[in-house]
Image (tube, rainbow, N blue to C red; front, side, top):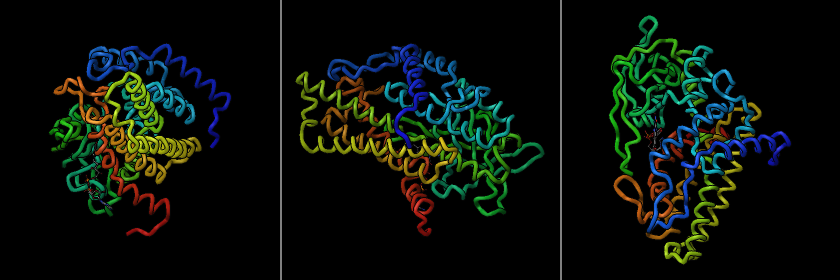
Length: 404
Ligand SMILES: Cc1cc2nc3c(=O)[nH]c(=O)nc-3n(C[C@H](O)[C@H](O)[C@H](O)COP(=O)(O)OP(=O)(O)OC[C@H]3O[C@@H](n4cnc5c(N)ncnc54)[C@H](O)[C@@H]3O)c2cc1C
Protein backbone atom coordinates (compact mmCIF):
# COMPACT_ATOMS: atom_id res chain seq x y z
CA UNK A 1 0.00 0.00 0.00
CA UNK A 2 1.24 3.48 -0.89
CA UNK A 3 0.78 5.59 2.25
CA UNK A 4 1.21 8.97 0.52
CA UNK A 5 -1.75 10.78 -1.06
CA UNK A 6 -1.83 10.76 -4.87
CA UNK A 7 -2.32 14.27 -6.40
CA UNK A 8 -6.08 13.50 -6.77
CA UNK A 9 -6.31 12.31 -3.15
CA UNK A 10 -4.45 15.41 -1.92
CA UNK A 11 -6.95 17.57 -3.83
CA UNK A 12 -9.85 15.64 -2.30
CA UNK A 13 -8.34 16.07 1.18
CA UNK A 14 -8.31 19.85 0.61
CA UNK A 15 -11.96 19.72 -0.45
CA UNK A 16 -12.84 17.85 2.77
CA UNK A 17 -10.87 20.34 4.91
CA UNK A 18 -12.65 23.27 3.22
CA UNK A 19 -16.03 21.59 3.80
CA UNK A 20 -15.23 21.22 7.49
CA UNK A 21 -14.12 24.84 7.78
CA UNK A 22 -17.40 25.95 6.25
CA UNK A 23 -19.94 23.51 7.72
CA UNK A 24 -18.77 21.98 10.99
CA UNK A 25 -20.97 23.75 13.58
CA UNK A 26 -19.46 25.61 16.53
CA UNK A 27 -21.96 23.89 18.86
CA UNK A 28 -20.30 20.52 18.26
CA UNK A 29 -16.81 21.66 19.14
CA UNK A 30 -15.93 20.47 22.62
CA UNK A 31 -13.49 22.40 24.76
CA UNK A 32 -11.04 20.26 26.70
CA UNK A 33 -9.42 23.29 28.31
CA UNK A 34 -11.89 23.50 31.13
CA UNK A 35 -10.57 22.80 34.61
CA UNK A 36 -12.93 20.09 35.88
CA UNK A 37 -13.17 21.75 39.26
CA UNK A 38 -14.69 24.90 37.82
CA UNK A 39 -16.17 24.24 34.39
CA UNK A 40 -17.91 21.55 32.39
CA UNK A 41 -18.18 20.84 28.67
CA UNK A 42 -18.52 23.74 26.28
CA UNK A 43 -21.96 23.42 24.67
CA UNK A 44 -25.29 22.77 26.36
CA UNK A 45 -27.24 19.66 25.38
CA UNK A 46 -29.89 21.62 23.37
CA UNK A 47 -27.22 23.46 21.38
CA UNK A 48 -25.54 20.19 20.55
CA UNK A 49 -28.82 18.75 19.24
CA UNK A 50 -29.19 21.80 16.95
CA UNK A 51 -25.57 21.39 15.88
CA UNK A 52 -26.16 17.73 15.03
CA UNK A 53 -29.15 18.64 12.83
CA UNK A 54 -27.08 21.18 10.89
CA UNK A 55 -24.16 18.77 10.59
CA UNK A 56 -26.32 15.91 9.28
CA UNK A 57 -28.02 18.23 6.77
CA UNK A 58 -24.66 19.40 5.42
CA UNK A 59 -23.42 15.80 5.07
CA UNK A 60 -26.68 14.63 3.41
CA UNK A 61 -26.46 17.50 0.91
CA UNK A 62 -22.93 16.41 -0.01
CA UNK A 63 -23.77 12.68 -0.15
CA UNK A 64 -21.22 12.03 2.60
CA UNK A 65 -23.45 10.08 4.98
CA UNK A 66 -22.91 6.97 2.83
CA UNK A 67 -20.02 8.27 0.74
CA UNK A 68 -19.35 5.06 -1.22
CA UNK A 69 -22.94 4.52 -2.34
CA UNK A 70 -24.14 5.54 -5.80
CA UNK A 71 -25.71 8.99 -6.02
CA UNK A 72 -29.17 7.55 -6.78
CA UNK A 73 -29.27 6.09 -3.24
CA UNK A 74 -28.02 9.28 -1.58
CA UNK A 75 -24.29 8.54 -1.69
CA UNK A 76 -21.42 10.35 -3.43
CA UNK A 77 -19.78 7.45 -5.30
CA UNK A 78 -16.47 8.02 -3.49
CA UNK A 79 -13.63 5.52 -3.88
CA UNK A 80 -12.51 3.51 -0.83
CA UNK A 81 -9.46 5.77 -0.42
CA UNK A 82 -11.57 8.94 -0.61
CA UNK A 83 -13.86 7.49 2.06
CA UNK A 84 -10.80 6.79 4.19
CA UNK A 85 -9.64 10.41 3.81
CA UNK A 86 -13.10 11.64 4.79
CA UNK A 87 -13.24 9.35 7.86
CA UNK A 88 -9.71 10.34 8.84
CA UNK A 89 -10.64 14.03 8.73
CA UNK A 90 -13.84 13.42 10.71
CA UNK A 91 -11.80 11.71 13.45
CA UNK A 92 -9.02 14.31 13.40
CA UNK A 93 -11.50 17.18 13.73
CA UNK A 94 -13.24 15.37 16.60
CA UNK A 95 -16.52 15.49 14.64
CA UNK A 96 -19.30 13.03 15.44
CA UNK A 97 -19.55 10.21 12.90
CA UNK A 98 -22.88 10.24 11.11
CA UNK A 99 -23.15 7.24 8.88
CA UNK A 100 -25.48 4.52 7.73
CA UNK A 101 -25.92 1.31 9.69
CA UNK A 102 -24.16 -1.84 8.45
CA UNK A 103 -27.52 -3.25 7.34
CA UNK A 104 -27.40 -0.60 4.57
CA UNK A 105 -24.04 -1.83 3.28
CA UNK A 106 -25.41 -5.39 3.43
CA UNK A 107 -28.50 -4.45 1.39
CA UNK A 108 -26.16 -2.74 -1.07
CA UNK A 109 -24.32 -6.07 -1.58
CA UNK A 110 -27.19 -8.59 -1.41
CA UNK A 111 -30.42 -6.59 -1.88
CA UNK A 112 -32.62 -6.26 -4.96
CA UNK A 113 -32.96 -2.91 -6.76
CA UNK A 114 -36.42 -2.51 -5.20
CA UNK A 115 -35.02 -3.10 -1.70
CA UNK A 116 -32.22 -0.59 -2.33
CA UNK A 117 -34.72 2.03 -3.49
CA UNK A 118 -37.06 1.39 -0.57
CA UNK A 119 -34.61 1.10 2.33
CA UNK A 120 -31.42 3.03 1.50
CA UNK A 121 -32.50 6.67 0.87
CA UNK A 122 -34.48 6.94 4.18
CA UNK A 123 -31.38 5.60 6.00
CA UNK A 124 -29.24 8.36 4.49
CA UNK A 125 -31.81 11.02 5.44
CA UNK A 126 -31.85 9.69 9.02
CA UNK A 127 -35.55 8.82 8.84
CA UNK A 128 -35.06 5.18 9.76
CA UNK A 129 -33.24 3.93 12.81
CA UNK A 130 -32.24 0.26 12.69
CA UNK A 131 -31.55 -2.39 15.26
CA UNK A 132 -29.98 -5.82 14.80
CA UNK A 133 -31.82 -9.07 15.53
CA UNK A 134 -29.01 -11.63 15.69
CA UNK A 135 -28.58 -12.98 19.21
CA UNK A 136 -31.08 -15.11 21.10
CA UNK A 137 -31.02 -16.29 24.73
CA UNK A 138 -29.48 -19.63 23.66
CA UNK A 139 -27.59 -18.42 20.58
CA UNK A 140 -24.77 -15.91 20.86
CA UNK A 141 -21.38 -17.19 19.74
CA UNK A 142 -23.10 -20.26 18.29
CA UNK A 143 -25.41 -18.01 16.31
CA UNK A 144 -26.34 -20.66 13.75
CA UNK A 145 -28.32 -22.48 16.46
CA UNK A 146 -30.92 -19.66 16.45
CA UNK A 147 -34.54 -20.71 16.98
CA UNK A 148 -36.71 -17.73 15.95
CA UNK A 149 -39.04 -19.33 13.47
CA UNK A 150 -40.56 -17.89 10.27
CA UNK A 151 -43.26 -19.95 8.55
CA UNK A 152 -44.38 -19.11 5.03
CA UNK A 153 -48.03 -18.08 4.64
CA UNK A 154 -48.69 -17.00 1.03
CA UNK A 155 -46.72 -13.82 0.33
CA UNK A 156 -45.77 -13.40 4.00
CA UNK A 157 -43.70 -15.04 6.69
CA UNK A 158 -45.18 -15.37 10.19
CA UNK A 159 -42.38 -14.81 12.70
CA UNK A 160 -42.35 -16.13 16.29
CA UNK A 161 -39.47 -16.09 18.78
CA UNK A 162 -37.16 -13.90 20.83
CA UNK A 163 -33.99 -11.88 20.29
CA UNK A 164 -31.75 -10.52 23.06
CA UNK A 165 -29.12 -7.77 23.46
CA UNK A 166 -30.87 -5.86 20.67
CA UNK A 167 -29.02 -2.52 20.88
CA UNK A 168 -31.26 0.49 20.44
CA UNK A 169 -34.45 -1.57 19.85
CA UNK A 170 -36.32 0.82 22.18
CA UNK A 171 -35.64 3.76 19.83
CA UNK A 172 -35.43 1.93 16.49
CA UNK A 173 -38.18 1.94 13.90
CA UNK A 174 -36.70 -0.87 11.75
CA UNK A 175 -35.04 -4.20 12.48
CA UNK A 176 -33.29 -6.90 10.52
CA UNK A 177 -33.58 -10.37 12.00
CA UNK A 178 -32.05 -13.73 11.23
CA UNK A 179 -34.88 -16.28 11.34
CA UNK A 180 -35.11 -20.01 10.76
CA UNK A 181 -37.12 -20.76 7.65
CA UNK A 182 -36.16 -24.44 7.22
CA UNK A 183 -35.75 -26.35 10.50
CA UNK A 184 -34.95 -29.60 8.65
CA UNK A 185 -31.83 -28.19 6.92
CA UNK A 186 -28.31 -28.25 8.50
CA UNK A 187 -28.10 -25.34 10.95
CA UNK A 188 -26.15 -22.87 8.75
CA UNK A 189 -28.67 -23.38 5.97
CA UNK A 190 -32.38 -22.79 6.51
CA UNK A 191 -31.79 -19.26 7.88
CA UNK A 192 -33.20 -16.10 6.23
CA UNK A 193 -32.31 -12.40 6.71
CA UNK A 194 -35.56 -10.41 7.05
CA UNK A 195 -36.27 -6.66 7.28
CA UNK A 196 -39.35 -5.24 8.99
CA UNK A 197 -40.66 -2.18 10.85
CA UNK A 198 -40.63 -2.26 14.66
CA UNK A 199 -44.27 -1.13 14.76
CA UNK A 200 -45.43 -4.31 12.97
CA UNK A 201 -48.13 -5.87 15.18
CA UNK A 202 -46.63 -8.57 17.45
CA UNK A 203 -43.22 -6.89 18.03
CA UNK A 204 -42.50 -5.90 21.65
CA UNK A 205 -39.39 -4.63 23.43
CA UNK A 206 -38.18 -4.92 27.06
CA UNK A 207 -35.09 -2.89 28.11
CA UNK A 208 -32.04 -4.36 29.90
CA UNK A 209 -30.13 -2.08 32.30
CA UNK A 210 -26.30 -2.18 32.30
CA UNK A 211 -23.66 -1.52 34.95
CA UNK A 212 -23.10 2.03 33.66
CA UNK A 213 -26.80 2.74 34.39
CA UNK A 214 -27.65 3.09 30.71
CA UNK A 215 -30.15 0.76 29.09
CA UNK A 216 -28.74 0.51 25.60
CA UNK A 217 -30.03 -2.93 24.79
CA UNK A 218 -33.17 -4.96 25.04
CA UNK A 219 -35.02 -8.20 24.74
CA UNK A 220 -37.18 -8.18 21.59
CA UNK A 221 -40.14 -10.51 21.25
CA UNK A 222 -42.01 -11.58 18.09
CA UNK A 223 -45.51 -12.99 18.32
CA UNK A 224 -47.17 -13.86 14.99
CA UNK A 225 -45.36 -10.99 13.25
CA UNK A 226 -46.37 -10.86 9.57
CA UNK A 227 -43.46 -9.90 7.25
CA UNK A 228 -43.72 -9.81 3.43
CA UNK A 229 -41.54 -12.42 1.70
CA UNK A 230 -40.18 -9.63 -0.52
CA UNK A 231 -38.43 -8.24 2.60
CA UNK A 232 -35.99 -11.17 2.64
CA UNK A 233 -32.49 -10.00 1.67
CA UNK A 234 -30.66 -12.50 -0.53
CA UNK A 235 -32.01 -15.97 -1.14
CA UNK A 236 -34.45 -17.57 1.27
CA UNK A 237 -32.61 -20.14 3.44
CA UNK A 238 -29.23 -18.56 2.51
CA UNK A 239 -29.45 -15.74 5.07
CA UNK A 240 -26.49 -17.04 7.07
CA UNK A 241 -24.17 -15.77 4.33
CA UNK A 242 -25.97 -12.41 4.19
CA UNK A 243 -25.55 -12.15 7.97
CA UNK A 244 -21.84 -13.02 7.61
CA UNK A 245 -21.34 -10.13 5.15
CA UNK A 246 -23.08 -7.87 7.67
CA UNK A 247 -20.73 -9.01 10.47
CA UNK A 248 -17.66 -8.45 8.29
CA UNK A 249 -18.81 -4.84 7.73
CA UNK A 250 -19.51 -4.44 11.45
CA UNK A 251 -16.15 -5.87 12.52
CA UNK A 252 -14.08 -3.81 10.09
CA UNK A 253 -15.77 -0.56 11.09
CA UNK A 254 -15.65 -1.03 14.89
CA UNK A 255 -13.18 1.41 16.46
CA UNK A 256 -11.50 4.04 14.36
CA UNK A 257 -7.72 3.92 14.59
CA UNK A 258 -7.47 7.61 13.77
CA UNK A 259 -10.06 8.37 16.46
CA UNK A 260 -8.06 6.36 19.01
CA UNK A 261 -4.89 8.26 18.16
CA UNK A 262 -6.85 11.50 18.44
CA UNK A 263 -8.11 10.48 21.91
CA UNK A 264 -4.50 9.99 23.06
CA UNK A 265 -3.47 13.35 21.59
CA UNK A 266 -6.36 15.08 23.37
CA UNK A 267 -5.43 13.49 26.70
CA UNK A 268 -1.75 14.35 26.24
CA UNK A 269 -2.58 18.02 25.44
CA UNK A 270 -4.88 18.19 28.45
CA UNK A 271 -2.22 16.76 30.79
CA UNK A 272 0.38 19.22 29.50
CA UNK A 273 -1.98 22.19 29.94
CA UNK A 274 -2.96 21.10 33.45
CA UNK A 275 0.68 20.62 34.43
CA UNK A 276 1.59 24.08 33.07
CA UNK A 277 -1.29 25.55 35.06
CA UNK A 278 0.11 23.91 38.22
CA UNK A 279 -2.94 21.69 38.66
CA UNK A 280 -2.64 18.72 41.02
CA UNK A 281 -4.78 16.60 38.70
CA UNK A 282 -1.81 15.48 36.67
CA UNK A 283 0.41 14.50 39.60
CA UNK A 284 -0.07 10.79 38.86
CA UNK A 285 0.43 11.28 35.14
CA UNK A 286 3.91 12.52 35.87
CA UNK A 287 4.94 9.32 37.59
CA UNK A 288 6.95 6.75 35.65
CA UNK A 289 4.60 3.76 35.46
CA UNK A 290 1.60 5.49 33.83
CA UNK A 291 3.94 7.47 31.58
CA UNK A 292 5.50 4.29 30.22
CA UNK A 293 2.04 2.83 29.76
CA UNK A 294 1.01 5.94 27.84
CA UNK A 295 3.99 5.50 25.51
CA UNK A 296 2.84 1.90 24.86
CA UNK A 297 -0.61 3.20 23.89
CA UNK A 298 1.01 5.47 21.27
CA UNK A 299 2.87 2.52 19.77
CA UNK A 300 -0.38 0.55 19.67
CA UNK A 301 -2.16 3.46 17.94
CA UNK A 302 0.25 2.98 15.03
CA UNK A 303 -0.40 -0.78 14.98
CA UNK A 304 -4.18 -0.10 14.92
CA UNK A 305 -3.77 2.30 12.03
CA UNK A 306 -1.75 -0.21 10.01
CA UNK A 307 -4.35 -2.95 10.60
CA UNK A 308 -7.13 -0.59 9.41
CA UNK A 309 -5.10 0.39 6.38
CA UNK A 310 -4.79 -3.28 5.47
CA UNK A 311 -8.59 -3.73 5.58
CA UNK A 312 -9.10 -0.52 3.58
CA UNK A 313 -6.56 -1.45 0.93
CA UNK A 314 -8.33 -4.83 0.51
CA UNK A 315 -11.69 -3.10 0.13
CA UNK A 316 -10.12 -0.72 -2.40
CA UNK A 317 -9.16 -3.78 -4.46
CA UNK A 318 -12.72 -5.11 -4.31
CA UNK A 319 -11.91 -7.86 -1.76
CA UNK A 320 -14.09 -8.58 1.29
CA UNK A 321 -11.90 -8.73 4.44
CA UNK A 322 -12.75 -11.67 6.64
CA UNK A 323 -10.15 -12.81 9.20
CA UNK A 324 -8.52 -9.41 8.57
CA UNK A 325 -11.75 -7.79 9.87
CA UNK A 326 -11.54 -10.06 12.94
CA UNK A 327 -7.93 -8.94 13.56
CA UNK A 328 -8.99 -5.30 13.37
CA UNK A 329 -11.95 -5.93 15.69
CA UNK A 330 -9.95 -7.77 18.38
CA UNK A 331 -7.16 -5.23 18.35
CA UNK A 332 -9.36 -2.10 18.21
CA UNK A 333 -11.71 -3.16 21.01
CA UNK A 334 -9.02 -4.45 23.38
CA UNK A 335 -7.00 -1.32 22.62
CA UNK A 336 -10.00 0.83 23.58
CA UNK A 337 -10.05 -0.88 26.97
CA UNK A 338 -6.32 -0.29 27.45
CA UNK A 339 -6.70 3.40 26.51
CA UNK A 340 -9.48 3.82 29.08
CA UNK A 341 -7.43 2.10 31.80
CA UNK A 342 -4.31 4.16 31.11
CA UNK A 343 -6.26 7.43 30.95
CA UNK A 344 -8.05 6.86 34.24
CA UNK A 345 -4.70 6.02 35.89
CA UNK A 346 -3.04 9.16 34.52
CA UNK A 347 -5.77 11.35 35.95
CA UNK A 348 -5.55 9.77 39.39
CA UNK A 349 -8.71 9.82 41.50
CA UNK A 350 -10.28 12.45 39.22
CA UNK A 351 -10.10 9.98 36.34
CA UNK A 352 -12.75 7.85 38.01
CA UNK A 353 -15.33 10.64 38.24
CA UNK A 354 -18.20 10.61 35.75
CA UNK A 355 -20.50 13.35 34.51
CA UNK A 356 -24.06 12.30 33.72
CA UNK A 357 -27.61 13.02 34.77
CA UNK A 358 -26.86 12.06 38.39
CA UNK A 359 -23.31 13.41 38.62
CA UNK A 360 -22.84 17.09 37.78
CA UNK A 361 -19.30 16.51 36.53
CA UNK A 362 -17.76 19.25 38.64
CA UNK A 363 -14.77 17.08 39.40
CA UNK A 364 -14.77 15.10 36.16
CA UNK A 365 -11.81 15.90 33.88
CA UNK A 366 -12.70 16.28 30.20
CA UNK A 367 -16.41 15.81 30.86
CA UNK A 368 -15.80 12.50 32.65
CA UNK A 369 -15.23 10.75 29.34
CA UNK A 370 -12.51 8.38 30.60
CA UNK A 371 -14.53 6.95 33.47
CA UNK A 372 -17.45 6.48 31.08
CA UNK A 373 -15.19 4.85 28.51
CA UNK A 374 -13.69 2.60 31.22
CA UNK A 375 -17.15 1.19 31.89
CA UNK A 376 -18.55 1.14 28.38
CA UNK A 377 -15.49 -0.34 26.66
CA UNK A 378 -15.89 -3.57 28.65
CA UNK A 379 -18.73 -4.69 26.41
CA UNK A 380 -16.97 -3.94 23.12
CA UNK A 381 -14.98 -7.20 23.23
CA UNK A 382 -18.31 -9.09 23.42
CA UNK A 383 -20.46 -7.16 20.92
CA UNK A 384 -20.23 -8.22 17.26
CA UNK A 385 -18.68 -11.56 18.28
CA UNK A 386 -16.40 -12.03 21.30
CA UNK A 387 -12.61 -11.77 21.20
CA UNK A 388 -12.42 -15.58 21.61
CA UNK A 389 -14.59 -16.06 18.52
CA UNK A 390 -12.50 -13.55 16.52
CA UNK A 391 -9.34 -15.42 17.56
CA UNK A 392 -10.96 -18.67 16.39
CA UNK A 393 -11.62 -17.05 12.99
CA UNK A 394 -8.02 -15.81 12.78
CA UNK A 395 -6.66 -19.25 13.80
CA UNK A 396 -8.78 -21.30 11.41
CA UNK A 397 -9.39 -19.05 8.39
CA UNK A 398 -6.30 -16.87 8.67
CA UNK A 399 -3.68 -19.37 9.84
CA UNK A 400 -5.31 -22.58 8.55
CA UNK A 401 -5.07 -24.29 11.98
CA UNK A 402 -7.42 -27.26 12.47
CA UNK A 403 -10.75 -26.63 14.22
CA UNK A 404 -10.96 -27.75 17.84
C1 LIG B 1 -22.66 -3.87 23.83
C2 LIG B 1 -23.30 -5.03 23.14
C3 LIG B 1 -24.17 -4.79 22.12
C4 LIG B 1 -24.79 -5.87 21.48
N1 LIG B 1 -25.70 -5.59 20.50
C5 LIG B 1 -26.33 -6.60 19.89
C6 LIG B 1 -27.34 -6.32 18.92
O1 LIG B 1 -27.66 -5.16 18.62
N2 LIG B 1 -27.97 -7.35 18.34
C7 LIG B 1 -27.67 -8.64 18.65
O2 LIG B 1 -28.26 -9.54 18.04
N3 LIG B 1 -26.73 -8.95 19.58
C8 LIG B 1 -26.06 -7.96 20.22
N4 LIG B 1 -25.13 -8.24 21.18
C9 LIG B 1 -24.91 -9.63 21.57
C10 LIG B 1 -23.56 -10.19 21.14
O3 LIG B 1 -23.52 -10.41 19.75
C11 LIG B 1 -23.35 -11.49 21.96
O4 LIG B 1 -23.31 -11.13 23.32
C12 LIG B 1 -22.08 -12.18 21.58
O5 LIG B 1 -22.16 -12.71 20.28
C13 LIG B 1 -21.74 -13.33 22.58
O6 LIG B 1 -22.83 -14.16 22.76
P1 LIG B 1 -23.33 -14.54 24.24
O7 LIG B 1 -23.49 -13.27 25.00
O8 LIG B 1 -24.53 -15.42 24.10
O9 LIG B 1 -22.14 -15.34 24.91
P2 LIG B 1 -21.80 -16.87 24.71
O10 LIG B 1 -21.84 -17.22 23.28
O11 LIG B 1 -22.65 -17.67 25.64
O12 LIG B 1 -20.31 -16.92 25.21
C14 LIG B 1 -19.93 -16.96 26.58
C15 LIG B 1 -18.42 -17.05 26.66
O13 LIG B 1 -17.95 -18.26 26.05
C16 LIG B 1 -16.98 -17.98 25.05
N5 LIG B 1 -17.14 -18.90 23.93
C17 LIG B 1 -18.30 -19.28 23.33
N6 LIG B 1 -18.06 -20.12 22.30
C18 LIG B 1 -16.71 -20.24 22.22
C19 LIG B 1 -15.83 -20.97 21.34
N7 LIG B 1 -16.31 -21.71 20.35
N8 LIG B 1 -14.51 -20.87 21.56
C20 LIG B 1 -14.01 -20.11 22.57
N9 LIG B 1 -14.79 -19.42 23.43
C21 LIG B 1 -16.11 -19.47 23.26
C22 LIG B 1 -17.29 -16.55 24.60
O14 LIG B 1 -16.16 -15.93 24.04
C23 LIG B 1 -17.72 -15.90 25.91
O15 LIG B 1 -16.59 -15.49 26.64
C24 LIG B 1 -24.50 -7.20 21.85
C25 LIG B 1 -23.60 -7.45 22.89
C26 LIG B 1 -23.01 -6.38 23.54
C27 LIG B 1 -22.08 -6.67 24.66
